[in-house]
Length: 482
View (cartoon, rainbow, N blue to C red):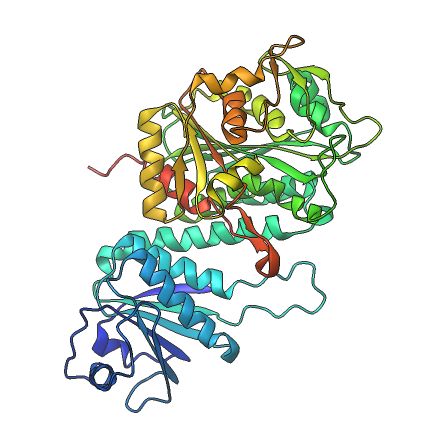
């Protein structure tokens, strides 16, 4: 699906040829002397279109207009939540008609966040998973024409939003694939494919290299599976070499049975989504390849399966991490923090300006925040402020969580430097406290996306989050043009 930005006011939008014209109307809409505005004015005067976000009026073959079908869409004050509500309702309405060209037009110039939400909502509503289906129906929409009254001012946020859509959909694609179609080796090849783009390089390490480095925690998780582990290292180099990079570390457990501490059978199929952090890193690099910004970004993905094989790590085993710290593994289902801690130590070599890890880490975070916001942990005020801003501008929302030292008390053990789990209370926080032990050399933040990375039930599928948040964050670090 392609997007095209057009300079269209309400009068010009009426002449745009397309299968469906979605006309987004704010509460402050004012009628004018042109066919489209006159029609809208009559509908409002007759009470056929309520002034309520998400209200729709569907008109087939409207006279004197270029579209085959017109849908008037109420978006209230034009802010993000109301734009999402309106566009989502409109896309549900036209889905059965399978349009090929859709025009999405604003009667008033949107802000960049509302434009971003409109585009990502269209993409979300029209997304089709097809990789492992024998007779999948392809996405029918080939082109979305986005009309705004002043396109020049919105050219940059439009390009960023389109790139975000590309990245989100790549992340969704890999997260949705079954575990036998998204092994660590598959993820490595996906990363290598991204390296065909300008400014991106990729290196993939296997068991021998990881053993030589001393990543004992990562190796422990992988040892129960016959599937080879991969440590994937991506570099986007858009700024001078002297510019410190941002490092994104994505949890890449391509299937998580829980290991010896095996999970219940119900919904275990959803543990293919335990690599959504890794998928989000791939998605960000896809977006960077499209935008070619002047920043430096490193992506690290420790990828493996967590299975209860005869060689699997056992509860009570003690392993030595890359940092030299020893870890008592009390629960093998707390494996994400084990692969991440070695990757976080590895990140030190890049002398980063900041490191963010992204992981479907804890069920406790799902209980705390549900699927609306990701949990965000950081002790660095500047990083926290930047991520909060990116959360709002992308509408890929997160929520700040505490990191009080008292939460680390439960990680103490007599048999190693640290245990990999504490008790049930504050489970998302104690997991973050475990990771924090390996991040003393740089500003660090942790995104727990266990609740936001995918949906269950009839709507089962990956969301592509937090690609939007991460992309907005890394783009905010570009040096403004003089």
